Image 1 (cartoon, rainbow, N blue to C red):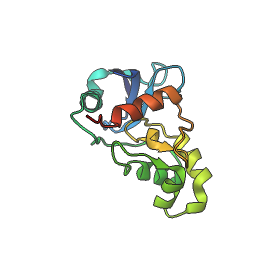
Image 2: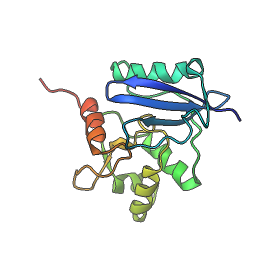
Image 3: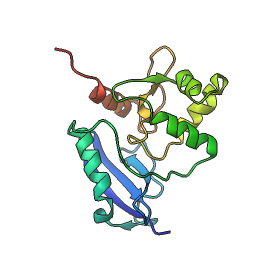
Length: 163
């Protein structure tokens, strides 16, 4: 399988994405020194922005407030449990947050809160699989691979302004 990557400039900083031969998204990370990108780099993939136009377009539409959900084929690598958690993350609506406990409940196991948190932290497709929308039980910001300041920026972006 060949892997292709590109950089994507966003209003919260530069990001990198990687896709497979079929254009399925494998990775999306912010390049802020906090997140680690495993595939979206020259020693693992071919730099081919044209193969990621669909990803770049949807990310720009998101930050231009023209889209609240992504419609991308994704193929993140992970265990069956991680895949289940990542699918549940995609059901958290734009502008809302869930606690880890709510996320565990959504997959049918309220005792799996810590495991859900660990799976959330292993999400290789930030933003598109919206792990930033998960917060602590009492509403506190908790860990985020891109750092808490980036998580706060993303949540602020998704919070509607009240006039």
